[in-house]
Length: 383
Ligand SMILES: [Zn+2]
Image (cartoon, rainbow, N blue to C red; front, side, top):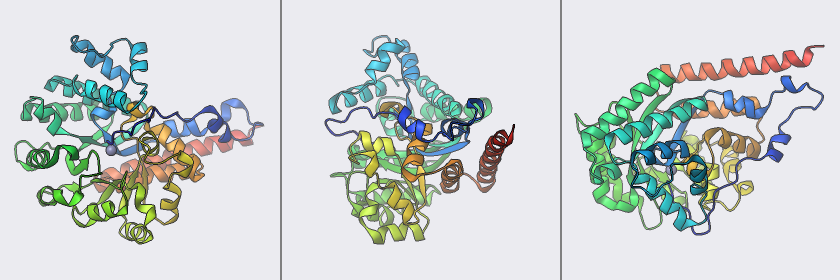
């Protein structure tokens, strides 16, 4: 997560004017339209860059607030919708911290995690690498093993009951410095604590004044323990931060990487080494990492042959979800249904799922695409 700069407000979701531009010929009957919205909504997807607390939707926050009546967070859904509309930077921080304050016990962690998976299932997300910041919870007094059991219980229940496969990325909140790095690395590598679903190690928070190389020893420990390296880099700082993430932290994917397009050599390096970027368009707009979506560098990334994945970051906080991010990307890249399906396969390919799991979701994407487009073609041929 990156906190927005002053003046940032909730990003406008993909609107009806955009929707109209994707509609096929008006001569088709309404019930046979291959609407890109409907296609994206039903498309099996994987998400690689999404934060745990940052995924708490108003529905989940209402449930947590009802558990802790001393909190000032409203429990009424309508009041909550207003509460989640940020007026400025200070308001965003206030809301984010008030949600952090609602996650007080291991059972709150379990509820949050399972309910986030429920929101994912509703979008047909089949697999997600959820970025969890255990340091924040442990610092707030939640027992370390109880925290791990809570996320693992929720992970197993989400897979069994919702068909959503979750894996964890434990990230260092960069602003909390080396103490947070030490705690996060210890939790990630210690036998008996490290959760079965942990696949990667990350670094989030602000980039300005938080140099990547200082975290090298902690990434070295995590990598030695078999974890993948996925730091945020180049979201609000220049391409040097991305180079640092690659050379010091041995990044296998890069969170955001927005400024990569300022350095052709870096783009070529990312493309050649198949290092995927986790692009989160609406988040970049909400935090003012990009001035407007039309100028988002996703086009240059794709044109340079970089493996681009599309993600939602802190979706309810930015007024978006993964489906909306796919529609934004489709518009910016001029993608049709098959192009969108390829984008979904990029995320599967760049994930840390095992080969069998990747093949299963990719086959599901292909089957869905063929059957959706086949049905649409048949409808066009019908008298
Ligand atoms: Zn993030």
